[in-house]
Image (tube, rainbow, N blue to C red; front, side, top):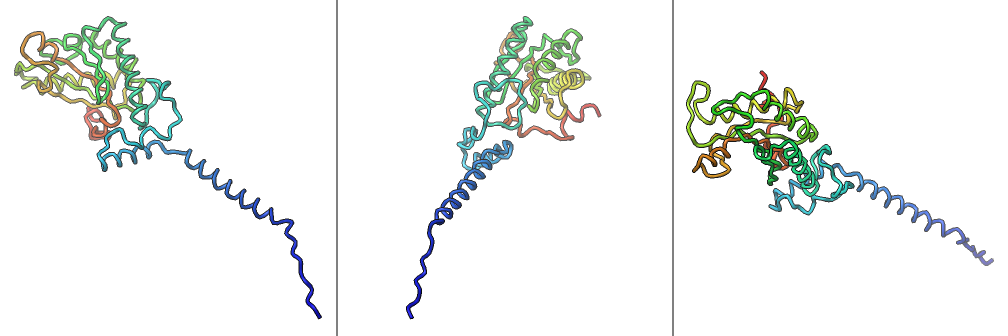
Length: 259
């Protein structure tokens, strides 16, 4: 007796292909979603690690990726977690422009110089604006000028480290209070820091003070006019890369100045 031939029904085989396609699409969308969720801080840390290993500097190919923010419309006062260098450069330019406009509006262009450097924005305050010769205490009317910078500019740039740098000329000083220019420059920087923290509301964990004495002049100390330029206090708004070496714990100067 001949076996009965079984005829398979292939009408539903297209469902298998369709199901496979749906699975692949689901996997694709899951991957795309995961790629869109970038941890900015971890991404920057990874970028900096590659930069240090391969010596590519701040222009690593990893930087500037995975960001939804516009490079053009990035505001100067936007809170700044660790962000790619291109975006931070836009922010630094905006801060520089804002401070220059404030200085010109206050008629202080001759006493305060604002410049953008690789390390950040430098607001250089000439000695004669806030200090008397050989002194570190700040007069009340001069204090208001420091407060203006602190409240109108620095307080609106959270998460940026600020370094206050004291500088003198090369003429030696020797007094009971200041045995050398080191002590004078350090005291001036610390007094500016105290105003910014105590009265302008700057986070003490994001600010530090240092005295350079006469050893970081702007111009050669070969005339009275040049020595006057070198007697200054610089308020430096540091970039994220420049601030990596700054202390941010209870051991730093700013966090312990009131102990």
